Image 1: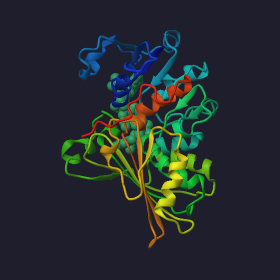
Image 2: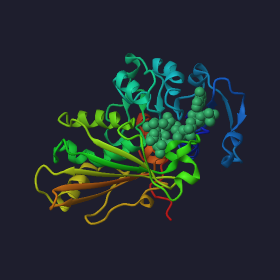
Image 3: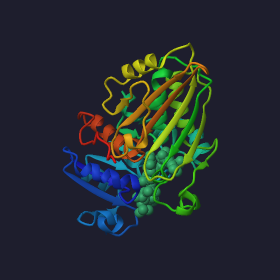
Image 4: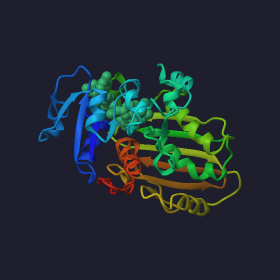
Length: 342
Ligand SMILES: NC(=O)C1=CN([C@@H]2O[C@H](COP(=O)(O)OP(=O)(O)OC[C@H]3O[C@@H](n4cnc5c(N)ncnc54)[C@H](OP(=O)(O)O)[C@@H]3O)[C@@H](O)[C@H]2O)C=CC1
Ligand SMILES: CC(=O)N[C@@H](CCC(=O)OP(=O)(O)O)C(=O)O
């Protein structure tokens, strides 16, 4: 299969390239960059790939559709909706790692992304690719955000089965620096990140509407959620610590059994035994999401700890999972299931 990758020079695109290179169904990866870009060696835009001979060519939508069977966009929000629109209109298979087509309501996109949204008719052609629950994929797959992936996989069993007080969801999510992409910012300088923790986008994170959109599809009674994000001094990894009130008294064992039932056919979701909680190194380097569950009978609170590698399950790995499903391949094809421990 001929595969187009737009955005190889970014963190997600760089990881996606490595995964596609060893994917058994991919014969060639064709790289495209800015529309006004001169043809550039991959080794120039991704110095870590010195021995690669591939070239990055200017993006031309018609060329991408003529030369390839599918296209991955690992480009910034706002950029993707312009570049990918001709492919969406042509029903050409696309996996889009940006947030441009995740929200069905254009007004919500504008409110949270602070820029104009794609037209309603275009948004209606996209499907949300939370891979464990995406049973009706369209040709245009909107790959979920990293925090949204970790949080939704953590909440699905208790929300889908109405096991909680729907007004009680509190999420404390933490991310490594690669989640911010390669662009430099004051908050991403070493002196700010090292030996530090930084809360950011308080009540303003673009994943709040994305998470709410999916939660309300599962259970309309959920009115809102408390969601905070913190930058932590690591390169990769997301830990979403989720606190919810149980609807009825329960036990950790009963909850673990429910999570195991929900994810019994999900090869990339690991439900840890009662009493065990995941760390970032449980998953970093793999496409796995590891879940730890604990019930506190004193406060009647369920703690769910959900960890992923933001660049794997949170981006490039889940993109491959969605690609496999679009192409009717086993969903584990070409994906690492073991973390790069230690
Ligand atoms: N980082 C993460 O953990 C996650 C990221 N995402 C999403 O994935 C996408 C990529 O993220 P990330 O890799 O972190 O971003 P980076 O900032 O690291 O890279 C952005 C990429 O977009 C390209 N790009 C920017 N503008 C244009 C343009 N006008 N034409 C063509 N290419 C362009 C850049 O190319 P160039 O360098 O040449 O400008 C670069 O390849 C984003 O939408 C992000 O929100 C989703 C989940 C997780
Ligand atoms: C640490 C950090 O900055 N993380 C990014 C996550 C971006 C992401 O997941 O991409 P989407 O915007 O496509 O969802 C953030 O909080 O915005």
